[in-house]
Length: 437
Ligand SMILES: [Cu+2]
Image (tube, rainbow, N blue to C red; front, side, top):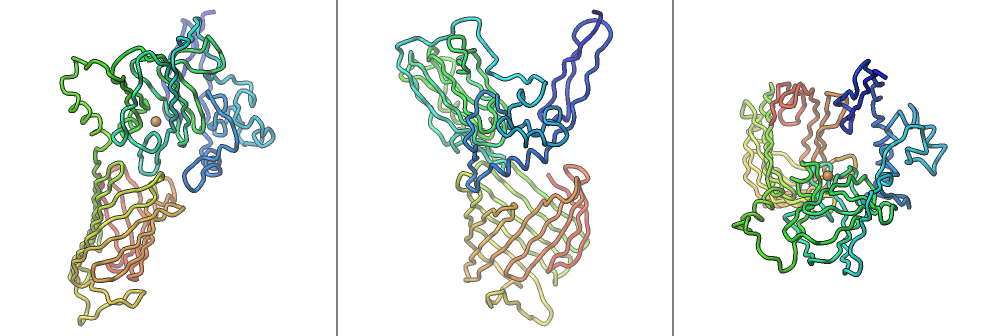
């Protein structure tokens, strides 16, 4: 033959790949994979997403990667346009029916041995839903992260069956420690044994194993960012002898729980011609502590800062009640004052005020914020940052009932730096360089 064949593995987004040549001789290069049709994928996801964050699977019964929602994004299967998909509604996500390329899936796997679990053992059935929030990058199971959930008790000798539904919009390779599980893929006695299974959006898979290895075993998503943010559970055996290798189980548990409770820190400041504009934020799975500031270069522009401590609630984490503190100092010409839309007089010139409020994320990711201050003043505000205008261009706006508004755009130079230009009702027009971390 004297030929060397290419074996290529790409990342899911196909931005990078690695290549292995198998065999000696003349290299047989493969066609580079075409770019994904992201827009088709987004359109499809949008049409399936309900307002409460559930996915509407339109009655499809999906398992074992046989139906792959990503198919709509693969030009080599669905062609440059999606005409084929529209024609063949029944098979619209079935890659092997749509093209002559063979796509591998789990139902093709078959064990050479009989893998049946011990007959007559009691069976414990557990249902999981894989859940998460793309926007805040929180990943969970049944909407609870590891530190919010109890260990799952199993008994030595019983068979454990897990029915897992992926209700998120990403795939999750779920990995179990300590055991190999059977993947119920229609191969009967020869169902394959695995300890990791990649579960696609809207897919339901059934796994089972015999509880035959005492210990505390972690079951988690193998995308490590998802694991760290809390997508996992611990299986533990009832009445098991303590593990001599773990000298301090409480500390071990604290360390594990600390993982998804960890706060991340963000800070940004815009050094602009009309002042300094910035924010700093501490956030974790549920909590958000954030502060914004505008520091003018003269007394008329003044200084102001707003701090909010809030907790995201609900499955989609669209609602965040918070308490806040406002501090402002400014001098207007001849001591005039301002009124808000409700006719309340504003104490902007010199104010230290506590507040309570809620922030709610509306469709289009616009944040609607209602705030009541200790002096009775009320403020309603709409804002959105990071509106994608072009690859490196982002727009932002804010408007509120204190008759303040802001309109801006930024050009991203790299992940820590960019140029920003904005108009602010208090500070006027400014242009500057921003840094963020
Ligand atoms: Cu995951």
